[in-house]
Image 1 (tube, rainbow, N blue to C red):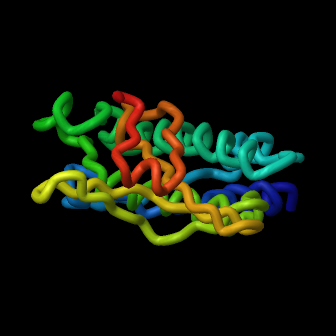
Image 2: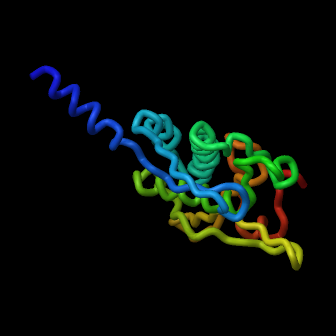
Image 3: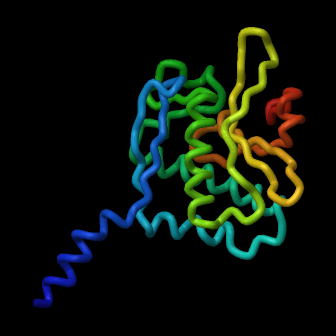
Length: 179
């Protein structure tokens, strides 16, 4: 009879994981599901505990995106992804801005579903078109108190680093950590 509780923990345990659908290899050519066990999810919670304002929450979001990417890279070849599109063009696991905007949005929706986002609402990805031929996509959040819009852009950096966060209008005007 002592084995029954252990059996239930082993049987139910794997179900205690959040699953997130991600994509990679440019334009979401490859899809995968990343499983985030509850123990891993508990690592995110302190980032969002007792934040005083929306600006602090954006910093937490940036760090959480890096942590999510690290977790995804442990289960997929996305650990090979390098910032931008030029340093990883032929690698399996590479990601363009479409992949990043999809994945970052999925990660933030998970944060939102857990009630950890107190100052922002997750929106659909947005794009900017600085040149006629080249679009650039990013995840998108809105500050709930005043409607200020921001992008959460992980494309600029190598896998696992915190995302860049910009005011939407600044980003649409070409804001980049490389400028």
